[in-house]
Image (cartoon, rainbow, N blue to C red; front, side):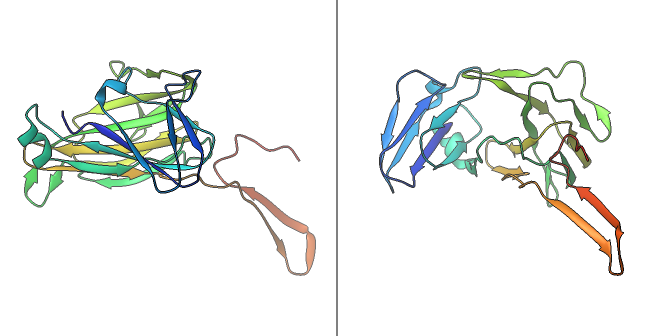
Length: 212
């Protein structure tokens, strides 16, 4: 739609950003500056941004092919940077296609590592849902899961993942992000107060394995 745009906001001076991993920087902004990319910058329905400094990214979306329908159903989502420390499990997304007594069309976008295996409610994704490549980054892919309804008990991945919900119709638009920002690795050691040999080492889900 005409609302499919990306808003980039600078947080530091002399920030350079390449779009879809082009050799030369496409965008140069300073702190507080902003820049928008329209749908012509999408390749394979995605945009890959790489900068030399931190910056914010918001995605605008809307339903319908006419400006009136697009803007009346518009929404905006803050997009986190790709990070292998994303959560691997998201639980309890209750009835994402419903607001009060109204039902809407919805889809889930799942971004994860190319080698990851995705499960929805404990089951592998349908064979018709295939990974889509991200131009400029061959380590990550994204899946589009259409027509999400009912209660989602869990979405899991064998690697870190970012999940985005988009829903609406020609009059209403909404979205949500799950596992938004990275989870820093943490090692927890608990021990019996009187006996160090009783120490127990535990790690959180962002690690693939540990060696003692």
